[in-house]
Amino acid sequence: MQTRRSKIYFVLLFFALPTGFCFSQQDRTWTNSYLEENASFSPHGTNPYFILEPGYQSQFKGKEEGKSVELIITVLNKTTVIDGIETGIVEERETADGELIEVSRNFFAISKRTNGVYYFGEDVDMYKKGIVVNHEGSWRSGAKGAHYGLVLPGIPLAGSRYYQELAPGVAMDRSEILSVNERLQTPVGAFDGCLKTEETTPLEPQTKEYKYYAKGVSLIQDGTLCLVRHIHIKN
Image (tube, rainbow, N blue to C red; front, side):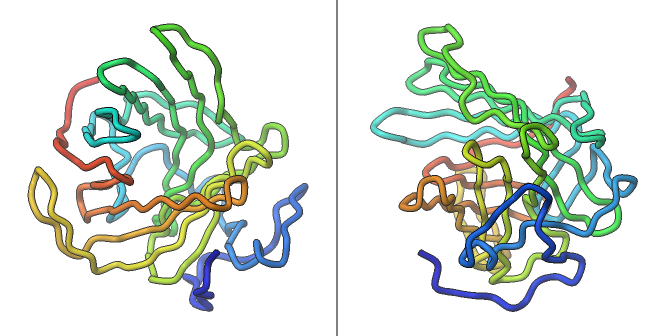
């Protein structure tokens, strides 16, 4: 699937396997454990490409499977403790042709030491005709063998590859930084110096998704969904 094998990883990562995980030889080319201490995490803060400050909201629109999709991402003014870490909560609300299909609360923390953004899990509500039908994709670090992953490093380097989610059988997303110098035109303007990632998962080997992040703005494109608005609100 992946042909590039980067030997350059930012020096604040190490490669010891988390307890309880078993990876194939191919999986070992992806960083899956991180040299961080619990006291170094903060539930709020900023990374050059990621804003985890209460009230920051982004709106995305696009087409998926012939439907008009809208995604609203909001950093809530709330925290919760996951795996012994106080994490910030980011709510995502997704609609398709105006019908609510998913609401998730995602748990993040930023390292005060490395400025890396870490992902501690998510609570998912999947909707059909206004009714919650399942919680597919939900996981929390420290529960059922799951372990937190890395969303974005403090020092992004093209070629870096790392797991974002480590919940066996549930969520195993991983990311490779393809470029840190992209230019992207969006409805809210053009952005230079963007970070581009390719996301894959061993749970769905044929699936690939691409994301773009802009400095000081955070995510600006997620697959076919493009940023149409970003503001700070009171919540």
